[in-house]
Image (cartoon, rainbow, N blue to C red; front, top):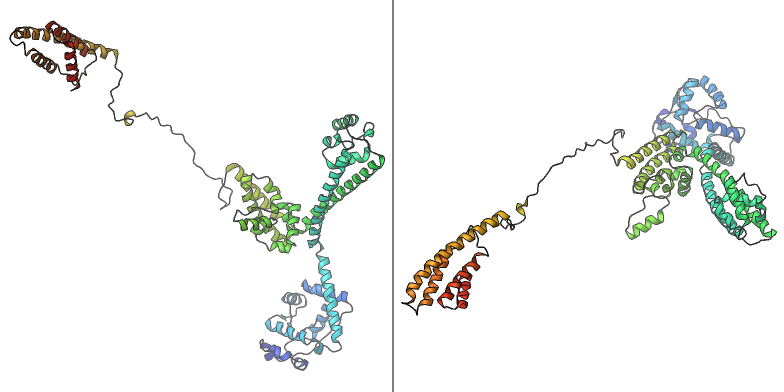
Length: 535
């Protein structure tokens, strides 16, 4: 470490920041601007590493304190310091005024460029080797210091966990199929894979189930069912060598299952150390898969919320864009517990909100200094409240505090009795076709009265015609026709009372009887009356 006093040298040149680099083009020019005050060499790389890490943290090393105390006694001008934080610590502890400005930065840059010429007794090769060794030591120290923050272990652990799951499924499937030839009923009775392998490892041959004790693995009812099934099993007989190979496979399955449990606990602890808020939001498995898919926690923190939402569904996304269909709503985040417990119609909304909150948690874990999971717990509680709102009471506005319930007006049922208006159904007269019995009786009385009047008029006409018959025999028919016309005109149908079907036959009967008495033709008379009625 080298510190310089600026008061004893030419200050005018130091104030020219833009042209200061010209004064350090050669070692001769640099020696005119600055002069070495004190130099002390580190004994080894460990001491240099301790001093450098202390400077990075803004602390003063013991060796640096001794050097600064000597300078304080002799110095009467302020001290130029490259680090403002370190300058504040020196001023606080040693009461030595320090300066940090752009001029000081340019000065330090010029000194580093001519370090070989300003410090006598140091060869360039030796200086380069010291710098390289210090850089390697510092890198190793930083990695060792933040070992809990190394997310590479998470990427490897989750990959190994997935591989173990695949191998376990293959081994268990082979074990069940292999032993199923000997005891096929056991696979239907015991559904748990680990329990199946443990029972098989303890008993072996099917004949040994009758005397075996399986109470540590199975309940009493299941144990009795297994023993009963072993006595009447339909499986084939196998040799001892086959049983030994099957038992060896069961041992492998049990060992891999135990190692998987241990690896899962290791992954949980590592996720809580590196990304506690992400673990609270989506769980350790989904969080680890997101980190592994992105490559690292820092790379994942650079992604947007929409990218995190569909991370893992890239094939479906590009297929949808190519075919112009709907894009996927979720990727790896679909396996989170919050999305799993949501109804299908709300999965897209919850996955979008969960992705937004998860991105905040990722960035907090990646760049924040605090390692607590308080933010994740708070955001998860908000999402759970939002989920209950969507499931129970429908969608509400997210703006505002969100604590007030949605206000809805109270429903009041208003019943109005409406009658049917038949006036608009038809344009025909409103009189009913059906008539009452009283109206029919009145109409019959009226027709009878009219028939009596017609008889009286007919008799009068007969008397008048008898007198004229002898005089005008040739014109009898014409007079008879005229008499008929008069008879019809004298009895017009009233508009108010329509002609009924009973009046016409009575009139016809009377006229026909009169004509027969006169000696006329009844057929002609009937036709004539019908024609008159038609007109």
